Length: 190
Ligand code: GRF
Image (cartoon, rainbow, N blue to C red; front, side):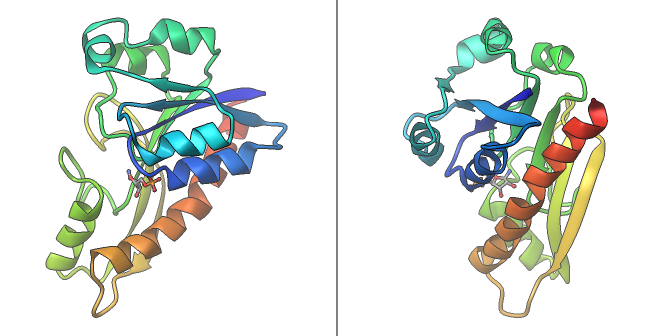
């Protein structure tokens, strides 16, 4: 049984879907939710699901031990980023090679990088007149949105779309694919 830590900074709808997907799984379980933002919606999701939550602070994460001893204590096997807005420090990447994945709400390498998150991504896609957008699920390395691609799925950008309507379409893709990709990765890596 692999132990998954989900890192999230926001509302946490992906976190919720991942928790639900693995709730009765024999392959893996979400055993820790890591959040950097007091008051974030994801904190009530983890509380409702009775999953331990670690609220991290930047000094220890970036200039201390990156909470590695805590992740070891929880025997975390895999780290899943679901709307986590801090960069992952190098010691953590080194401790979890090919075990940290991220989801981005656009077709990378376009519309990625620092500052490209949430509706900013969808606004940029619409402003550029793109006919399609989508999701990218990739391994995490030292550079934002740059690690090896695992899966990309596209969807149309429709006439009259705004950031919210496009975000809704993309969230649906994320909610469907992210838990399944995590599961496949765990099975393939065994
Ligand atoms: C998702 O769109 C994800 O792609 C991005 O952040 C968003 C998180 O949404 N990295 P939620 O908090 O899971 O609802």
